[in-house]
Length: 137
Image 1 (cartoon, one colour):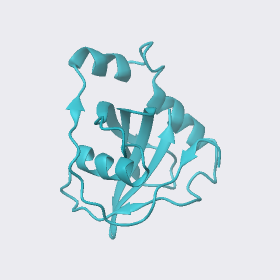
Image 2: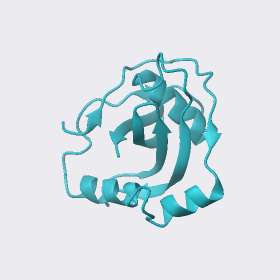
Image 3: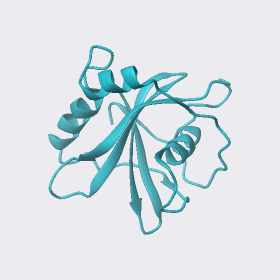
Image 4: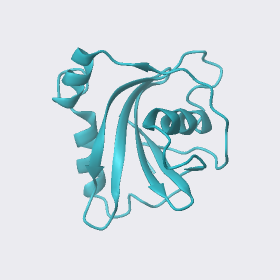
């Protein structure tokens, strides 16, 4: 499963701080600027071309539907070990709704800067909690 980072299942309390990107950085990320080459669109195209992309483990996060993307992403990154022992909070660069294909639900794609580099977190609320998966940029 090239490019997939898998976390553990379970509920984890999250007390991480989040710093939002400045408006210029968000505009560059959403316009496909040089800083990320529109990483979210690139991921969506890659996943849309692979009918097996949903296979594999994906942690479900036990947070209410009203949870913010920052809360869900913080828990997903913590479960995946992207924040452990690094003392550095993640930073949201861009986020937007995406659709991978006609068969699947809409997802929120969140581009984040972590201590291990940029990642894209896909999230979607399901009846049993938040479905999440973290991808390398």
